[in-house]
Amino acid sequence: MFSELETVVLTRDIAEHGLKSGDIGAVVHSYQGGTAFEVEFVTGGGGTIAVLTLKEDDLRPVGAREVLHARELTQATSL
Image 1 (cartoon, rainbow, N blue to C red):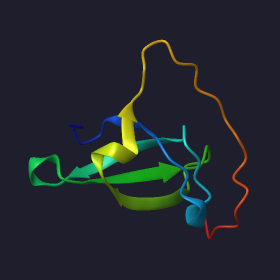
Image 2: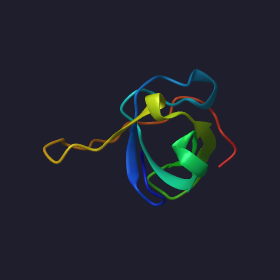
Image 3: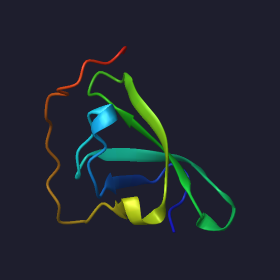
Image 4: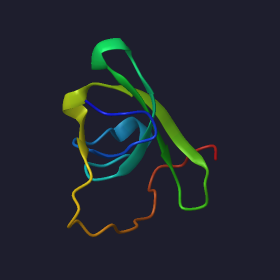
């Protein structure tokens, strides 16, 4: 289960939002019992890409030994 404001990693691509497995998001709301989570994904400039309702299987914690990297968002969005 994830806590609100926890940084998480997406475990699958979500093509309709230009998100890829490995993208980093922040939990902005946890539904009762951890049944689902609202997760916000943002650009490096702080613009919101999407706020999505995701299941626990769609996310994983960030590992302490992982290296974070940046990639350009390929889908046009209204940032």
